Length: 351
Image (cartoon, rainbow, N blue to C red; front, side, top):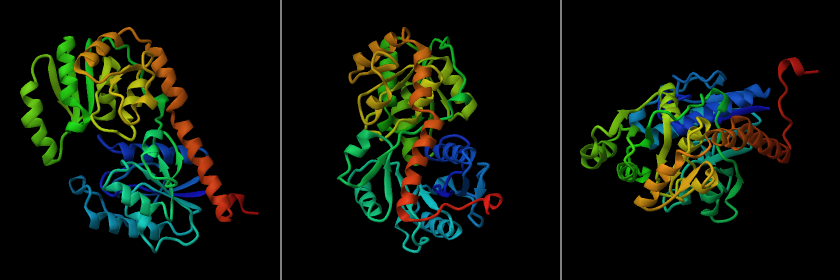
């Protein structure tokens, strides 16, 4: 098949640092290409993903994330450049609502956000003309039927993730500097358990800076250290050395990428039973799900006895890139077949 992928316009694929959606798109694009399919990616012009690219798209500006005009223009150029593909998989919101997209071409849209009051109406509109993929069963369960066509968990290339020994003597937090991510609760639990905490977090927006200054900065000290935003190599070094990842999310997160990254590094996860967390973690095996400060602190201490090998095996079995790519291909083939389209042949395959 010739498969078009549409990324959001603001961050390159793959992302240089924080960018969960862009990381997933990169993994999916590489996996589809490795499986023998022709991939055409519409993304920020500074992207380095080694697949075919839609020409004419500008370099994205991470400071303008969410800007409606930028996303609309990106979608118009993207869909114009994807004429002739067998299927389009769009990871934006505006693109799937663009009425001048290629006719009779199946469109898949991944719902990366929650079905809340704001996004719920948008996803319902998208589902009228596209096939919507949810990234967890919990997320799908919050959507009115029959909006979601398929549930496909995210995956990562576990072979590229080094397995750590957890001998650093610290717990870690990875995420965004935002109250919903539970950093304040992570600090509380680590201090109560008397375990040093190392924090790697994205902090770019005004809201993130204000939260850091007002809430987190006063709590920093010798045992609670903020490292900034880390690149991929440093991120996995931090995860691998940690006794556990503290991830006490405070909202129903559709999917927690950082949790499967931790498991791939052999690191147990201590989280709250919100959103997708119960689908990712096996309580008492690959981590713990707790709600109170005391419960999180106790789970952090208990996590040191969990089998790091089991964490890695779980990531390989359930959250690998190969599994994610296979799930998507199965869905793509079903949609292309239902549309009556004949998948494109590569030139060397033409009879």
